[in-house]
Length: 476
Image 1 (spheres, helix red, strand yellow):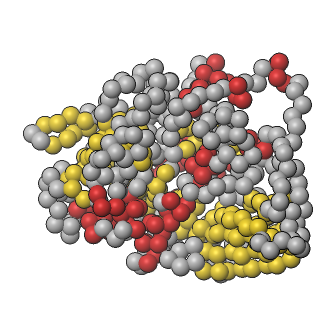
Image 2 (spheres, helix red, strand yellow):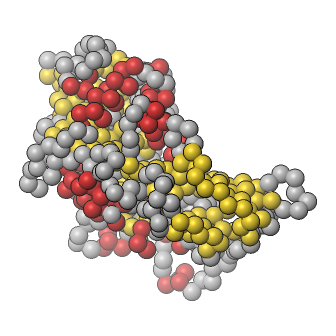
Image 3 (cartoon, helix red, strand yellow):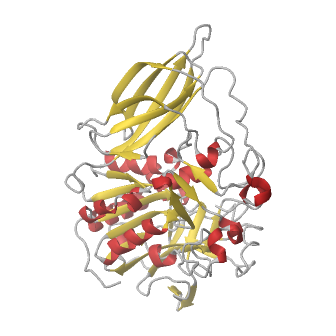
């Protein structure tokens, strides 16, 4: 989420620096293999291009679809390794390594998250080098096999990757600086196993068929949305571009349903560049964004809830990070319950749970943890109600809450944030054409991993109801 240590030298592009000659980074030593693909997602019969740098003489590749059990779909041996330089600005501008190997997506490969393992061997080396990559296969016939689309948080994967220099965070940067642009044309550290994997394993083990897409497919392939009744966001879905958001909000207005089993969702605005192969976000140092000097700030690459952008994420998800924060993380509520207190047990999401008002659920598996989203609330006769002053839709219903708070220092950059605010992780729903559910926490899927009975039943209720039919369209 927020980096408390800000540094901007790497972000400046003044005439003084424009003539500096950039040097390649120090080459890797020892036996290694690294790579990336030329796209995030593919459909059947498209060619997958593997860009590779390796000191290994021979490299083998195994491709598996990840699900309840990994399903091996393709292997290949004998890929020739060659070492290529790591450009000075590899993290922001990419590696520009050539394609080492191409292979087609078979018609038999189901839509899914595909894990690719590269193993490199070299004479005289007993232990091989290993790298794990990924790509996504979209459906060639969207909506025919299932009405549920899971869009993966691939933008977040990239934002946290520091390979080649910078991420969008200063705390683990090569030079202790904070980058403002990150490229997909470099090895990416996936976060799939942290959250989405647990959801996928539970769902596919329990009879739910899912189609898959990358974050950027909401921007560059929005035509797929109309074929689904339900779109899912799971885990840590933090970085959204304006076209992504525009297309999903239009989908909701036309009756499409969305379930955000995620937190810190749509927190930072990014701008896609190079046809989706790079992301720019100036985040806390938004004054350095070239758009700051214009009169139109709607695409300013900072927090969506910033007063200059005037488009809080609450308008999409019902909740936002400004009114949430951390729970059992960053020193906040480290002994907290990590569970939701139920306020309106008669709501349809609680059907067949037998849970009662005031009871809590999910604490065993810490379903409220890490980063949480909430809304401004007022209490009447023991029940919470949104004030709607923060952009939360008029029809939003608060179903559960758990305390959350920003970490000291996180909010200092934002001139309109009350530093002593205690917020909440908020579970709730709203209807605005389609129906939208939000879990308000990154860690909902941990309850599925732990087979928490209430979390499982609520998830079933949401998938069963919202995947069956779309709502009534409304005008934007």
